Each structure stands twice: as structure tokens, then as C-alpha cells.
Length: 363
Image (tube, rainbow, N blue to C red):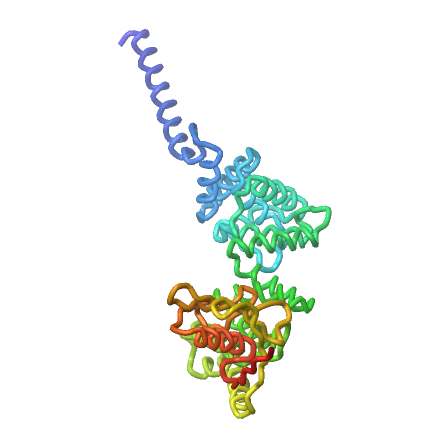
């Protein structure tokens, strides 16, 4: 073999070794290369890598998440912020709890870093009206905790809680109901407690509403409505404790059962009392008239109209009807039937279905 051929062969062998080594190196570190990755794809890869057991892969994941966060990926900023935070407000819910749990030991705990990232991410999402109900609630908690700055933190927190509750966030509904209750603003408390109770996540809102009607907080005492909410509380509790032991279920149901028994006793007493006399007067003519009662000076409680051969009785919209009265308008064969329905509907709604009434017309 000539010297020239040997030289060529050596060069080829050298190039082959370099290519082989480069290929092996590329294979071993290919996970670090993402030639055409978008910012969000870096975040997705990083989130996947930090959940692996391999230390090097985890640290690569941290780098990818940081890169995505630096380039403005909101999800990366939130994950990184939640991991940097020494603590998050009670009730805050992470959208990526597993990745956060794995990432937290890999980064330093710094309130300042967390605050910067949380503020940037949430303010951008809020400005774009792109926050979910849960994120609105998270943001309210962060503002309250001072992790997002506002000129008036108390007012901003309250506004965010209302937005979260309107969007369907249960903790926000429950908290608003409790906050208004503590301030004795029962009308507003009732609005949010009702929505929280109907969500069926906790029996307490329904119990509180039942107490409103039992004790007459912002409402006339109405044991029938109190029973409705106490029974809903019991139903919710039974659903929540369905998988508990019998002893645990009975213990959990004790409070709503006691409230139901309490309201039932009052209903029984009411049924034994003498009829309640309600005076009323009419305004109009024989075919079309409005009905007024002495204990509702704000205006008419309803009206009766006759069109052709049809008599229609209608409850006024200002009257909050009992749950047992499903409609505000009903058709009858006679004007007297319509009048009686309006009076009975009003009385039952205000004083309860178990009360007895004596209606007296005054001129």
C-alpha cells in the first residue's frame, strides 16, 4: 500500500470515528435539542422532563421551563412562580400540581421571584380576559396575600371574588356568602349562600340559609322554607358521606337532622294556632282589579283580569313566592277563584304553607 493510500485510509478512519462519536453524543443529548420548538413546546418538554427520575433530565427540564418563561409563556411563568414561592395562600389551586411538586426542590424559594412572575402572568391573563373561574379565585387570593400589587388590595380582592363566583367558582361563592353574613348584610349573603348551597359541595351554606328563615334574618320567619334548606343540607351531607362508615354518616347527619326536627316542631305549633287574619282591598272594576293587603304597603300583591271567558290571576313580581308555588300566573273559571289563589299564594309565601288564614275584605 502506498503512502498516499495509507494517508487517505487514515483520514477516512479519523472522519468515521469523529462521525461515530458525534452521533453517539447527539444521541445521548438529543433530548436537549429542539431545533424547531416553539416557546410553548419548550414549556411542555420542560414540564415532562422535571417529572423524570434522572437528575440531568430534570435540570434540563428546569432550563426549558425558564427559557419558556423568559420568552413570555404564561403557563411556564405560573409553574415557575408557584415553585419559587415559599408558600401560597390557603385555597390556591395549581393547574399543574404534579410538575410543581417535582420542580419545587429544583429551584430556590424566593418570594420576590415568585411575586414578579405571578404578577406578570396573572396581569396579562386578566388584561386579555383569559382567566378561568379558578384562576380568578387564585388571583384574588394572591392580591390579598400581597403577591400581586394593587392600589386598594381589599377592594380588588372583593371584585375578583365576585368575578370568580359569577364564573362558577364554589370557594368564591362560599366565601362571599360568609363575608356578607359576618357583616350582617343578609340580602347579599343570601344570594351567594344560595348559589353555594345549590352547588352541593358543603352542607353549611344550606344550613345558614335555613337559619335565615327560621330566625327571620332579613326575611319573615318561614319554617317551611327553613325546612327546605335544612333538607338540602341533609341531602348534601348524605352525598358527601356516602362512602363513610355508618357511624361516621350518622354523626355527620346529626346537625341537619336536628335542624329539621327543630323546624318541624315549629311547623306543628303553627298548625295548632288560630287562623291568621289578613285584610285586603281591591282596586279596579269587576273584570280587572288589583289586590292590596295591609301587611304589604309597597304595592299590589297581584291582579285578576278577565278577557272574554278566561280569568287570569297573576302574582306581582315584587312577591317572592314559596318553593311550593311554581308559577306566577294561572287561569281560572271564575274571578273569585283567581282572587283566592292570589291571596293564598301570598299568605303561604310570607307565612308558610302550614299556617291557616282568614281573609277579610275591607272597603
